[in-house]
Length: 128
Image 1 (tube, rainbow, N blue to C red):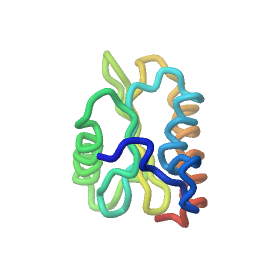
Image 2 (image 1 turned 90 degrees about the horizontal axis):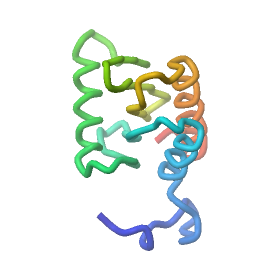
Image 3 (image 1 turned 90 degrees about the vertical axis):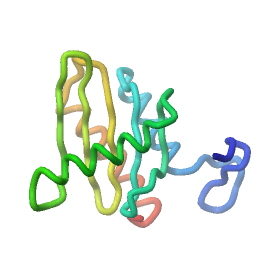
């Protein structure tokens, strides 16, 4: 994995963060209880990850697959609450966002913030 000095924005400007990384930073500002998050592309590769766990991107992809396998269609959104945390899945176009938060967040607001963040990213990068 390249360090941050190798990242460039959409125009190749080294001062501009990758749009997906920036979206996760902004989401963390909106959601102070955010513990981990990953943006996944249509090809099941991680576009950006925010976590202390180096395997979180792979875990997020596995969760997407598990949620989708429960039915005959791709899931648009999901919310799972446990005693320790809440897990959210939101899809917008070809992008998916999986996030884990603290236990007592406002689920509707968190889901809304995630969807708007993903819409902004999809518009910026053309839905890829």
